[in-house]
Length: 346
Image (cartoon, rainbow, N blue to C red; front, side, top):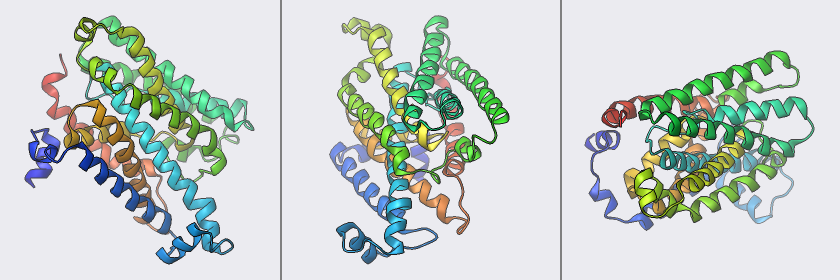
């Protein structure tokens, strides 16, 4: 109980960090491997470990289990891992750029911006799946730059920045609702997209988005040190010779690529970019050189586990994975508001 409370209260955790970042990276990797294996095997049709080995080795290429694996389970598992890594790293970047522990892609409206332009692209270009990731990126980038501009212009408290993001998000969500009302026949399955879900993910749908996400993750890893400098605050970053405006724009663009890529196929998944970076910092500390690689692994594992729970809790009925995340993320956000209240007016 003490460990559970200390996690949410943000107390010092030296005994966890003594093990070192490498230990926790290996732990996250192992957790991801187990979660992915279970995600591939469990569901309305169970694939046994022996069947899984035969399918992966190529010994079984024609059974129903093989077809389920290739056309349903594997694309879905890959989608969960890609979306989790992308949204977790996007959240870590946004928190560093805005120097705000409460910022995340869904809280400040970046997911909503990506969702709005994605659904608009679905209506205008229904047969051009390759356009969805760049459309989502543009919407995410516009929202990220808008919130960043508000933060720079008004120099308000951190809670004001969050409220500005919530206001922008509400406008964009109203735009999404309007598109749904005008084009209900085009946007089949849009309710699942709004909540965030992986039920309709296909290999073709992942093909283009995965390119954006992999590039975004690679750039985030390369710019980990610059994120550390930005998180010190604008004055400190300037004193160290950093071009703050340029790096802020570059990092926000990377966050937009990641969030937009995930939203283009997974819908409006919430709270990944909030929960995972904070959970990772609990184990590896505040250094973004450690946080970013850990977020890649932990984010992938988190969404994979949530997807598995969404399939199993009410089996054979399936929940959108976004509902599971909201049940987890809502209380976490409230707790975070309470524990960080002293810093919200800084």
